[in-house]
Image 1 (cartoon, rainbow, N blue to C red):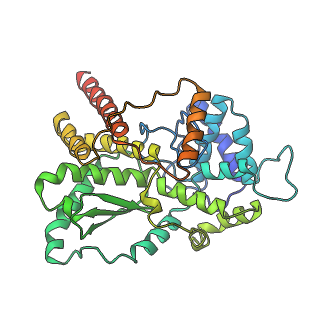
Image 2 (image 1 turned 135 degrees about the horizontal axis):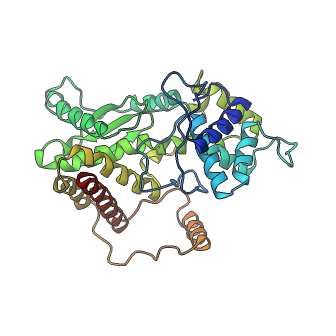
Image 3 (image 1 turned 180 degrees about the vertical axis):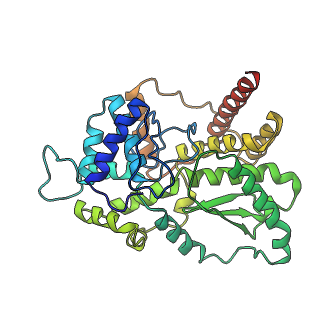
Length: 370
Protein backbone atom coordinates (compact mmCIF):
# COMPACT_ATOMS: atom_id res chain seq x y z
CA UNK A 1 0.00 0.00 0.00
CA UNK A 2 1.45 3.33 -0.98
CA UNK A 3 1.72 6.10 1.62
CA UNK A 4 0.57 8.61 -0.98
CA UNK A 5 -1.26 8.32 -4.27
CA UNK A 6 1.13 10.07 -6.62
CA UNK A 7 2.93 10.18 -9.96
CA UNK A 8 5.43 7.71 -8.51
CA UNK A 9 2.73 5.05 -8.47
CA UNK A 10 1.99 5.63 -12.17
CA UNK A 11 5.70 5.39 -13.03
CA UNK A 12 6.13 2.24 -10.95
CA UNK A 13 3.13 0.60 -12.57
CA UNK A 14 4.50 1.24 -16.06
CA UNK A 15 7.88 -0.14 -15.02
CA UNK A 16 6.13 -3.16 -13.56
CA UNK A 17 4.26 -3.77 -16.81
CA UNK A 18 7.51 -3.69 -18.78
CA UNK A 19 9.07 -6.11 -16.32
CA UNK A 20 6.04 -8.39 -16.48
CA UNK A 21 6.38 -8.63 -20.25
CA UNK A 22 10.03 -9.64 -19.91
CA UNK A 23 9.48 -11.97 -16.98
CA UNK A 24 11.52 -9.85 -14.56
CA UNK A 25 10.54 -8.43 -11.19
CA UNK A 26 10.65 -4.82 -10.12
CA UNK A 27 11.27 -3.90 -6.46
CA UNK A 28 8.42 -1.98 -4.91
CA UNK A 29 9.68 1.17 -3.17
CA UNK A 30 6.42 1.35 -1.21
CA UNK A 31 6.77 -2.19 0.11
CA UNK A 32 7.79 -2.86 3.67
CA UNK A 33 10.07 -5.78 2.88
CA UNK A 34 7.28 -8.26 2.16
CA UNK A 35 7.99 -8.82 -1.53
CA UNK A 36 8.04 -7.35 -5.00
CA UNK A 37 5.09 -5.99 -6.91
CA UNK A 38 2.74 -8.84 -7.71
CA UNK A 39 0.95 -8.57 -11.06
CA UNK A 40 -2.21 -10.69 -11.10
CA UNK A 41 -3.66 -11.92 -14.37
CA UNK A 42 -7.14 -10.48 -14.89
CA UNK A 43 -9.38 -12.19 -17.42
CA UNK A 44 -12.28 -9.73 -17.40
CA UNK A 45 -13.05 -6.26 -16.08
CA UNK A 46 -16.19 -5.61 -14.11
CA UNK A 47 -18.30 -2.50 -14.71
CA UNK A 48 -19.27 -2.48 -11.02
CA UNK A 49 -17.17 -2.90 -7.91
CA UNK A 50 -19.55 -5.50 -6.45
CA UNK A 51 -19.08 -7.90 -9.37
CA UNK A 52 -15.91 -9.98 -9.18
CA UNK A 53 -13.45 -10.45 -12.01
CA UNK A 54 -13.45 -14.26 -11.99
CA UNK A 55 -15.80 -16.36 -9.89
CA UNK A 56 -13.60 -19.45 -10.38
CA UNK A 57 -11.11 -18.00 -7.88
CA UNK A 58 -7.85 -18.17 -9.85
CA UNK A 59 -6.11 -16.51 -6.88
CA UNK A 60 -7.05 -17.05 -3.24
CA UNK A 61 -5.70 -13.62 -2.25
CA UNK A 62 -6.49 -10.38 -4.05
CA UNK A 63 -3.83 -7.67 -4.26
CA UNK A 64 -4.34 -5.21 -1.44
CA UNK A 65 -1.52 -2.81 -2.30
CA UNK A 66 -2.31 -0.04 -4.76
CA UNK A 67 0.81 -0.75 -6.79
CA UNK A 68 -0.13 -4.43 -7.21
CA UNK A 69 -3.72 -3.78 -8.16
CA UNK A 70 -2.98 -0.83 -10.42
CA UNK A 71 -0.36 -2.79 -12.34
CA UNK A 72 -2.75 -5.73 -12.74
CA UNK A 73 -5.65 -3.65 -14.01
CA UNK A 74 -3.41 -1.67 -16.35
CA UNK A 75 -1.76 -4.79 -17.79
CA UNK A 76 -5.19 -6.26 -18.46
CA UNK A 77 -6.34 -3.11 -20.23
CA UNK A 78 -3.26 -3.11 -22.46
CA UNK A 79 -3.76 -6.76 -23.41
CA UNK A 80 -7.43 -6.21 -24.17
CA UNK A 81 -6.96 -2.90 -25.96
CA UNK A 82 -9.15 -1.05 -23.47
CA UNK A 83 -7.36 2.25 -23.91
CA UNK A 84 -9.75 4.22 -21.74
CA UNK A 85 -9.09 2.21 -18.57
CA UNK A 86 -5.46 3.32 -17.92
CA UNK A 87 -6.49 6.86 -18.78
CA UNK A 88 -9.35 6.80 -16.30
CA UNK A 89 -7.10 5.41 -13.58
CA UNK A 90 -4.30 7.81 -14.44
CA UNK A 91 -6.68 10.76 -14.32
CA UNK A 92 -7.98 9.54 -10.98
CA UNK A 93 -4.45 9.31 -9.58
CA UNK A 94 -3.74 12.80 -10.85
CA UNK A 95 -0.74 11.53 -12.79
CA UNK A 96 -1.94 11.54 -16.39
CA UNK A 97 -3.39 14.61 -18.10
CA UNK A 98 -6.95 14.25 -19.28
CA UNK A 99 -7.66 15.08 -22.93
CA UNK A 100 -10.55 17.20 -21.75
CA UNK A 101 -9.98 18.10 -18.10
CA UNK A 102 -12.98 18.97 -16.03
CA UNK A 103 -12.39 22.52 -14.85
CA UNK A 104 -14.88 22.07 -12.05
CA UNK A 105 -12.85 19.22 -10.56
CA UNK A 106 -15.99 17.14 -10.08
CA UNK A 107 -15.74 13.37 -9.96
CA UNK A 108 -16.93 11.89 -13.25
CA UNK A 109 -18.55 8.47 -13.50
CA UNK A 110 -15.41 7.05 -15.14
CA UNK A 111 -13.20 8.46 -12.41
CA UNK A 112 -15.39 6.88 -9.74
CA UNK A 113 -15.26 3.59 -11.61
CA UNK A 114 -11.47 3.72 -11.66
CA UNK A 115 -11.38 4.45 -7.93
CA UNK A 116 -13.67 1.51 -7.22
CA UNK A 117 -11.67 -0.93 -9.33
CA UNK A 118 -8.47 -0.39 -7.35
CA UNK A 119 -7.84 -1.92 -3.94
CA UNK A 120 -6.55 1.26 -2.31
CA UNK A 121 -8.06 1.13 1.17
CA UNK A 122 -5.40 0.48 3.81
CA UNK A 123 -5.85 -2.56 6.01
CA UNK A 124 -5.84 -0.31 9.08
CA UNK A 125 -9.13 1.19 7.87
CA UNK A 126 -10.65 -2.28 7.45
CA UNK A 127 -9.55 -3.23 10.94
CA UNK A 128 -10.82 0.00 12.49
CA UNK A 129 -14.24 -0.42 10.90
CA UNK A 130 -14.44 -4.08 11.96
CA UNK A 131 -13.35 -3.26 15.51
CA UNK A 132 -16.11 -0.67 15.83
CA UNK A 133 -18.72 -3.17 14.64
CA UNK A 134 -17.29 -5.98 16.77
CA UNK A 135 -17.44 -3.91 19.95
CA UNK A 136 -21.20 -3.53 19.50
CA UNK A 137 -21.81 -7.28 19.74
CA UNK A 138 -23.18 -8.81 22.92
CA UNK A 139 -23.80 -12.36 21.67
CA UNK A 140 -20.29 -13.81 21.69
CA UNK A 141 -19.18 -16.85 23.67
CA UNK A 142 -16.30 -15.94 26.03
CA UNK A 143 -13.17 -18.04 25.57
CA UNK A 144 -12.82 -18.59 29.31
CA UNK A 145 -16.39 -19.82 29.79
CA UNK A 146 -17.18 -23.52 30.19
CA UNK A 147 -18.56 -23.81 26.64
CA UNK A 148 -15.80 -21.55 25.35
CA UNK A 149 -13.12 -23.90 26.68
CA UNK A 150 -14.96 -26.74 24.97
CA UNK A 151 -15.58 -25.20 21.53
CA UNK A 152 -12.79 -22.70 20.86
CA UNK A 153 -10.02 -25.31 20.50
CA UNK A 154 -12.10 -27.04 17.81
CA UNK A 155 -12.90 -23.79 16.02
CA UNK A 156 -9.29 -22.59 16.24
CA UNK A 157 -8.04 -25.84 14.70
CA UNK A 158 -10.52 -25.48 11.86
CA UNK A 159 -9.26 -21.98 11.12
CA UNK A 160 -5.63 -23.15 11.18
CA UNK A 161 -6.48 -25.97 8.78
CA UNK A 162 -8.31 -23.64 6.39
CA UNK A 163 -5.52 -21.06 6.39
CA UNK A 164 -2.96 -23.81 5.77
CA UNK A 165 -4.69 -24.27 2.41
CA UNK A 166 -3.83 -20.69 1.40
CA UNK A 167 -0.45 -20.86 -0.33
CA UNK A 168 -0.36 -17.15 -1.21
CA UNK A 169 0.94 -14.48 1.15
CA UNK A 170 -1.49 -12.22 3.00
CA UNK A 171 -1.24 -9.70 5.83
CA UNK A 172 -4.54 -10.35 7.58
CA UNK A 173 -4.46 -11.48 11.20
CA UNK A 174 -7.69 -13.42 11.50
CA UNK A 175 -9.67 -13.21 14.74
CA UNK A 176 -12.22 -15.94 15.38
CA UNK A 177 -15.28 -15.68 17.63
CA UNK A 178 -18.11 -18.08 18.44
CA UNK A 179 -21.64 -16.68 18.37
CA UNK A 180 -24.05 -17.96 21.03
CA UNK A 181 -26.61 -19.24 18.56
CA UNK A 182 -28.05 -22.59 17.53
CA UNK A 183 -27.81 -21.52 13.89
CA UNK A 184 -25.37 -23.14 11.47
CA UNK A 185 -23.77 -20.24 9.71
CA UNK A 186 -20.63 -18.14 9.74
CA UNK A 187 -19.88 -14.56 8.70
CA UNK A 188 -16.96 -12.19 8.37
CA UNK A 189 -16.18 -8.51 8.71
CA UNK A 190 -13.48 -6.62 6.83
CA UNK A 191 -10.05 -6.85 8.44
CA UNK A 192 -10.25 -10.55 9.26
CA UNK A 193 -12.95 -10.75 11.96
CA UNK A 194 -14.64 -14.18 11.67
CA UNK A 195 -17.78 -15.40 13.46
CA UNK A 196 -19.04 -18.98 13.58
CA UNK A 197 -22.30 -19.96 15.22
CA UNK A 198 -22.21 -22.41 18.11
CA UNK A 199 -24.72 -24.64 16.32
CA UNK A 200 -21.98 -25.64 13.88
CA UNK A 201 -19.77 -26.85 16.72
CA UNK A 202 -22.19 -28.60 19.08
CA UNK A 203 -22.12 -31.90 17.18
CA UNK A 204 -19.12 -33.58 15.50
CA UNK A 205 -21.21 -34.58 12.48
CA UNK A 206 -21.63 -30.90 11.61
CA UNK A 207 -17.88 -30.40 11.28
CA UNK A 208 -17.81 -30.77 7.44
CA UNK A 209 -20.35 -27.94 7.11
CA UNK A 210 -18.43 -25.88 9.66
CA UNK A 211 -15.22 -26.23 7.66
CA UNK A 212 -16.91 -25.10 4.48
CA UNK A 213 -18.69 -22.18 6.13
CA UNK A 214 -15.45 -20.97 7.72
CA UNK A 215 -13.46 -21.32 4.48
CA UNK A 216 -16.19 -19.42 2.63
CA UNK A 217 -15.92 -16.48 5.03
CA UNK A 218 -12.12 -16.49 4.92
CA UNK A 219 -12.46 -16.25 1.14
CA UNK A 220 -14.67 -13.15 1.45
CA UNK A 221 -11.92 -11.47 3.47
CA UNK A 222 -9.00 -12.51 1.25
CA UNK A 223 -10.92 -11.48 -1.88
CA UNK A 224 -11.66 -8.13 -0.17
CA UNK A 225 -15.36 -8.28 -1.06
CA UNK A 226 -16.46 -6.17 1.89
CA UNK A 227 -13.53 -3.85 1.37
CA UNK A 228 -14.58 -3.12 -2.20
CA UNK A 229 -18.06 -2.28 -0.94
CA UNK A 230 -16.53 0.03 1.68
CA UNK A 231 -14.46 1.73 -1.01
CA UNK A 232 -17.53 2.23 -3.18
CA UNK A 233 -19.38 3.89 -0.32
CA UNK A 234 -16.43 6.17 0.36
CA UNK A 235 -16.02 7.10 -3.31
CA UNK A 236 -19.73 7.82 -3.68
CA UNK A 237 -19.60 10.13 -0.66
CA UNK A 238 -17.40 12.58 -2.58
CA UNK A 239 -18.29 14.88 -5.46
CA UNK A 240 -14.90 16.60 -5.94
CA UNK A 241 -11.84 14.65 -7.06
CA UNK A 242 -9.41 16.68 -4.98
CA UNK A 243 -11.25 15.84 -1.75
CA UNK A 244 -11.25 12.13 -2.52
CA UNK A 245 -7.54 12.03 -3.39
CA UNK A 246 -6.64 13.96 -0.24
CA UNK A 247 -8.63 11.51 1.86
CA UNK A 248 -6.89 8.57 0.20
CA UNK A 249 -3.51 10.16 0.85
CA UNK A 250 -4.35 10.62 4.54
CA UNK A 251 -5.96 7.21 4.98
CA UNK A 252 -2.91 5.17 5.93
CA UNK A 253 -1.76 7.52 8.66
CA UNK A 254 -5.28 8.32 9.84
CA UNK A 255 -7.77 5.58 8.82
CA UNK A 256 -10.62 7.35 10.63
CA UNK A 257 -10.87 9.84 7.72
CA UNK A 258 -12.09 6.93 5.58
CA UNK A 259 -14.08 4.92 8.12
CA UNK A 260 -16.05 7.96 9.31
CA UNK A 261 -17.44 8.36 5.79
CA UNK A 262 -18.88 4.84 5.65
CA UNK A 263 -22.60 4.92 6.26
CA UNK A 264 -24.06 1.44 6.27
CA UNK A 265 -27.48 -0.05 6.28
CA UNK A 266 -27.88 -2.86 8.78
CA UNK A 267 -26.34 -6.10 7.55
CA UNK A 268 -24.99 -4.62 4.32
CA UNK A 269 -21.73 -6.52 4.48
CA UNK A 270 -23.46 -9.84 5.09
CA UNK A 271 -25.30 -9.65 1.75
CA UNK A 272 -22.89 -10.17 -1.07
CA UNK A 273 -23.48 -9.97 -4.78
CA UNK A 274 -24.12 -13.24 -6.62
CA UNK A 275 -20.63 -13.30 -8.17
CA UNK A 276 -18.99 -12.66 -4.81
CA UNK A 277 -20.82 -15.59 -3.23
CA UNK A 278 -19.94 -17.92 -6.09
CA UNK A 279 -16.31 -16.82 -5.96
CA UNK A 280 -16.18 -17.38 -2.18
CA UNK A 281 -17.64 -20.86 -2.73
CA UNK A 282 -14.97 -21.63 -5.32
CA UNK A 283 -12.18 -20.33 -3.09
CA UNK A 284 -13.52 -22.41 -0.19
CA UNK A 285 -13.34 -25.60 -2.25
CA UNK A 286 -9.75 -24.80 -3.23
CA UNK A 287 -8.77 -24.18 0.39
CA UNK A 288 -10.50 -27.33 1.61
CA UNK A 289 -8.83 -29.44 -1.07
CA UNK A 290 -5.70 -29.00 1.07
CA UNK A 291 -7.56 -29.80 4.30
CA UNK A 292 -9.17 -33.10 3.32
CA UNK A 293 -6.97 -36.07 2.37
CA UNK A 294 -9.41 -37.54 -0.14
CA UNK A 295 -11.82 -36.41 -2.84
CA UNK A 296 -14.61 -38.17 -0.94
CA UNK A 297 -13.97 -36.13 2.21
CA UNK A 298 -13.93 -32.92 0.18
CA UNK A 299 -17.20 -33.91 -1.49
CA UNK A 300 -18.73 -34.60 1.93
CA UNK A 301 -17.91 -31.07 3.10
CA UNK A 302 -19.45 -29.57 -0.05
CA UNK A 303 -22.53 -31.79 0.26
CA UNK A 304 -22.99 -30.78 3.90
CA UNK A 305 -23.08 -27.14 2.80
CA UNK A 306 -25.47 -27.80 -0.09
CA UNK A 307 -27.89 -29.70 2.16
CA UNK A 308 -28.43 -26.55 4.25
CA UNK A 309 -29.29 -24.45 1.20
CA UNK A 310 -32.94 -23.78 0.28
CA UNK A 311 -34.69 -26.43 -1.77
CA UNK A 312 -33.55 -26.60 -5.39
CA UNK A 313 -35.64 -24.53 -7.80
CA UNK A 314 -37.67 -26.48 -10.33
CA UNK A 315 -37.05 -24.06 -13.18
CA UNK A 316 -33.89 -24.51 -15.29
CA UNK A 317 -31.12 -21.94 -15.10
CA UNK A 318 -31.14 -19.02 -17.49
CA UNK A 319 -29.25 -19.48 -20.74
CA UNK A 320 -25.73 -18.14 -20.50
CA UNK A 321 -25.06 -14.98 -22.54
CA UNK A 322 -23.55 -15.78 -25.93
CA UNK A 323 -21.84 -12.46 -26.55
CA UNK A 324 -20.89 -9.14 -24.95
CA UNK A 325 -24.19 -7.51 -25.90
CA UNK A 326 -26.22 -10.24 -24.17
CA UNK A 327 -23.94 -10.08 -21.12
CA UNK A 328 -24.42 -6.30 -20.90
CA UNK A 329 -28.19 -6.65 -21.22
CA UNK A 330 -28.20 -9.26 -18.45
CA UNK A 331 -26.04 -7.02 -16.27
CA UNK A 332 -28.37 -4.06 -16.77
CA UNK A 333 -31.36 -6.25 -15.93
CA UNK A 334 -29.61 -7.29 -12.72
CA UNK A 335 -29.00 -3.65 -11.80
CA UNK A 336 -32.65 -2.76 -12.32
CA UNK A 337 -34.01 -5.88 -10.68
CA UNK A 338 -31.66 -5.83 -7.72
CA UNK A 339 -29.89 -2.47 -7.35
CA UNK A 340 -27.68 -3.49 -4.43
CA UNK A 341 -27.01 -7.20 -4.34
CA UNK A 342 -28.47 -10.58 -5.20
CA UNK A 343 -27.56 -13.89 -3.63
CA UNK A 344 -27.11 -16.81 -6.03
CA UNK A 345 -29.91 -19.35 -5.94
CA UNK A 346 -29.36 -22.95 -4.91
CA UNK A 347 -29.07 -24.20 -8.47
CA UNK A 348 -26.40 -21.63 -9.33
CA UNK A 349 -24.40 -22.46 -6.22
CA UNK A 350 -24.70 -26.21 -6.69
CA UNK A 351 -23.63 -26.10 -10.33
CA UNK A 352 -20.72 -23.80 -9.50
CA UNK A 353 -19.59 -26.04 -6.63
CA UNK A 354 -19.79 -29.14 -8.81
CA UNK A 355 -17.73 -27.43 -11.51
CA UNK A 356 -15.00 -26.23 -9.17
CA UNK A 357 -14.91 -29.66 -7.47
CA UNK A 358 -14.32 -31.32 -10.85
CA UNK A 359 -11.60 -28.79 -11.63
CA UNK A 360 -9.80 -29.26 -8.32
CA UNK A 361 -9.98 -33.05 -8.26
CA UNK A 362 -9.00 -33.49 -11.91
CA UNK A 363 -6.01 -31.22 -11.40
CA UNK A 364 -4.96 -33.20 -8.33
CA UNK A 365 -5.35 -36.48 -10.20
CA UNK A 366 -3.25 -35.16 -13.07
CA UNK A 367 -0.52 -33.99 -10.70
CA UNK A 368 -0.47 -37.38 -8.95
CA UNK A 369 -0.19 -39.18 -12.29
CA UNK A 370 2.85 -37.11 -13.24
